[in-house]
Image (cartoon, rainbow, N blue to C red; front, side, top):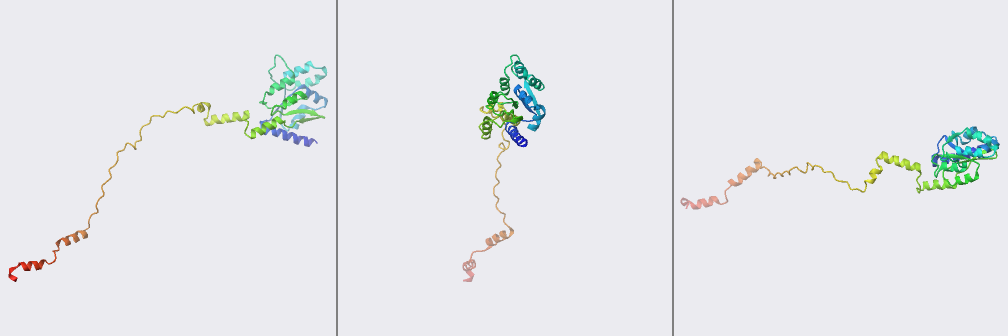
Length: 253
């Protein structure tokens, strides 16, 4: 049974790791009700919780949770001693303390930016926390600590992110850093609508060159053989020249 619970815990923790960027050491906000249940069932929170989550943890609480134990019955004194050992996280109610459930809800805000686990036995608090996506819940049942399965709001949030309907704050910050690295800042995006003025540049030096005149086609030079043929044709006499010369001579008559 213990191995089965550890497997379920590992599966749930990996869900928050990969979908909501939870990292070790895990910060666990604890109230007086969880300490009272651990004291009653003889559970060592500081020793058993890291083994159950299989990772380093930081146990913390708020001033309002301690003040609440002061106002309750004296039998919660042991729970107060346990809660005092944990790290203190600053809340918004330093002057006017509020109930622990209200204080823990204010620490988570709307998106649980500090990635807190919540350890509490308060049912009203746990029902309110299930409406906030990305909030792991811890409680004690039958002498054992249990990490609750992801709530419906967490599952719907992850589904919306996978379908591209929602962008997480961590994704927005990573997109902004990438834009700054690539030079796509807001100033550059604001200047997209403005027309850029063209800079006056010197003319192309190739366009300034004068056009070269094309050389006239040269006639092929005549060879010595062609010259001799033409001279031979010129020296030839017309046919019948001798007969005309004899008829014109009177001595031959």
